[in-house]
Amino acid sequence: MSVGTSSAPGGRDARRPPASRDRDFAEPGIHPDDLPEGLVVADENGHVICFNAAAERVTAVRGADALGQPLDKALPLEDLEGRRWWQLTDPYGGLATRVRQPERNLLLPGGREVLVSARYVRDVPTGPVRRVVVSLRDTEARRRTERSHAELIATVAHELRSPLTSVKGFTATLLAKWERFTDDQKRLMLETVDADADRVTRLIAELLDISRIDSGRLEVRRQPVDIGAAVGRHIQAYVAAGLSADRFLLRLEQPLPALWADPDKIDQVLSNLIENAVRHGEGTVTIDITPTASPREGEDAGTSVTVSDEGTGIPEESMNRVFTRFWRGSKRGGTGLGLYIVKGIVEAHGGTITVGRATDGGAEFRFTLPVAAPAYLA
Image (cartoon, rainbow, N blue to C red):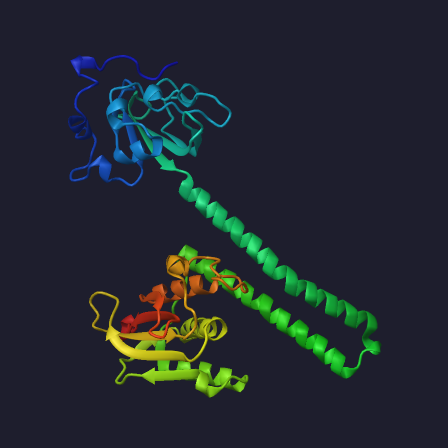
């Protein structure tokens, strides 16, 4: 049965101007075109009285063409099995106790997929339907999320396969032929197993960080942090591992404001940025620590850390993708998740991070943190 073909009672014109229609149901001060999702509203007779701008974008139908039309003509939806949705659900003639249709995937003419939910508005419970309010959402955002999840699973599977194969191979060999190997051979195999186990542990930690960042559950436990000392420890670790001390230049501008941050997470940020500069850059790795304005409103002081190198830098066309998942630049290796996590950690502190080209031509990463003393000390 077609949805709503009769004219409104009392001589009300179903094709009156859109502006007067919107005033029938819009909240004071809110216009339907201000809403981020598609909104379609039909009156008690099934005629469309609202078709907002977002609905036009989602459906590619002009609002002026939809207004006054029967709902099933203005919004001809089908389910994934090809059945006409409004005939199937019968909002005006169905169960009097029904108040809504949960969100589901439906198809517009041409096969375009949209997410649709509906609410039936009644003046009294079990009374006649006075309004059908339909919400429309494009599926592209969800598809991007699904693709991102699929890429994450594929990346994790690939990154886990190599170290786990190595661990399994060496342990199986040692268990089967322990007596045949010298102590030096055993030590070499166990050191390889240990390194691969560390690699798996790091990957799992990255996945947990991503989960917390995406869900907004990344906890920041603020403590006083000596950012200069923290950078110094990372430099000392590289020198102890065999790099020349001349490879690094640390410059501190004093006085620095007292910084309250999560020391473990700030170490993670510094570790990633300095490792990227050492591994992918060339020449001297320079770390500048300076006082600056806070990136948060209502605070005056902040601390800025800049890590730069003298390599080839990052191409301009890649600048806007550096902090996205799986970005690895021109050199392969790693999961491509490190800078995504770095950005999440900095932003969880209320800070900002940018990437650009250093004075000497290499890559330059700069993050700024507010001093942000805990509330109980404010």
